[in-house]
Length: 119
Image 1: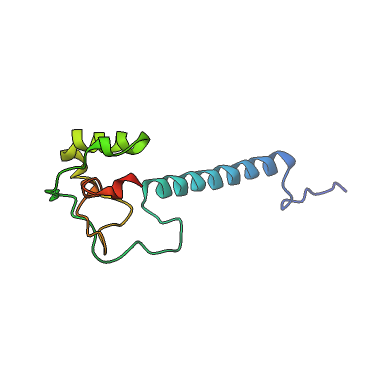
Image 2: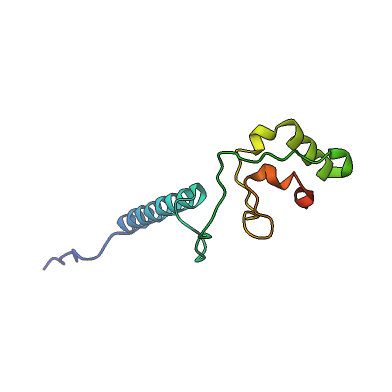
């Protein structure tokens, strides 16, 4: 009698193809997750985003920038840039969360109206 082939057993070529398919699927999912994390659509940490008051990035700072000559190094360069482009910094959110007490800043420009921008 002739031996029957076991139909449930995969050939080595079929096993390699199924592994490659799994690797492609896992890789695609990984790329999608990485893209979403980079774009900010999903948080990477379990921490919640800070709730409550946040900056109005529509400007609003009316005080003048401190003189860059009061500082040295990178702080001087930062204050010089703030003095040169105040309208830009007045539209930028400050990520150090200095909108809360005791600073109560309105925008990133607010940091440069006092010594807070120096570090």
